[in-house]
Image (cartoon, rainbow, N blue to C red; front, side, top):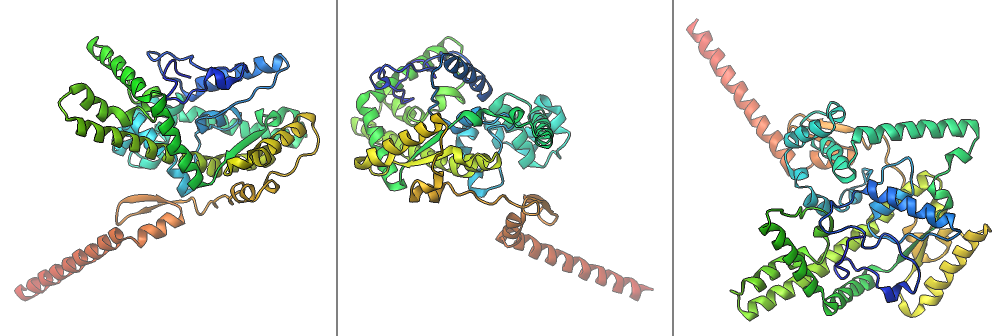
Length: 416
């Protein structure tokens, strides 16, 4: 969506567009405030409605999943999380990099939460870091108060209950009712090879020249007294930050040619690593967030996985199955169930059972002074070396206290 920087953002080229109109490309200037998910959702839904009004078919291609998923559910924030341990890791480093305050102590985050969302702050204890961080994160990512988000969700759930009781299904329609989703999936080893090759292609296409121009842009703003917020937007893109150390050495001119080449090789390696990690998190998002969200809406039959692991079999594994499903969907005829499409589809589209209320219960360890969520985390904490050490030391202190008390009582008894 950002102007310029086609290589860093892997923007589709005019040749690749094949004459098909593409929307929301290059619409955000570098000096404009980066978009939040609410801005993206509003503008994208306007474009989708315009395309449909002209009798055309809108196709959304992602992309960052918590943006694209925000289009699908009217009654749920796209950044809502569950308690799944793997899901807890989704995009954490990117979020912390964009919003450093989320790494601070709970008291500092709590003060910020009181400032931006006092209603939500009143619900939590200042030391309840998990809840304070989550509420603040919602505001930082979406630009909306967590208290408003949760209030809307409650209202929407109540409306859905009323609709279900009245039998008026039309009012319960969401964007999902007219959507079909495709997940072009590849096995991990094959995908990693392709991602590494993609970075090589970006280097050949001029990635270094592009990041040099970005650095020049930054320096111009620094010198003019208008520094750029590098914690958001294009400045957290993979392929820029990994090259910063190399750029500094290159521009300073003090490092030897050999040292500069080592930094260049390191920058490329870091870009490849970051790309593989991001791909892993994207897959986790689909499996642990999108799939359960669809299941909750009874819309699991909307998501189809096509297997692109073997490129030589692209036509029979991806192209033809996708066209067949899309054709059936648009004609309103019976479609195959998604899990029946392939072995990989059956493996990756399975829905995990939701955690029980007991599994999500919050418990406080009075010995260690920390709060944990769920039986699994509680068992892990109680069995941890830290907890056992604190209990052991506390036992020693208690025994010593009793000993001193007994000695004092004996001395007082003798004196009497």
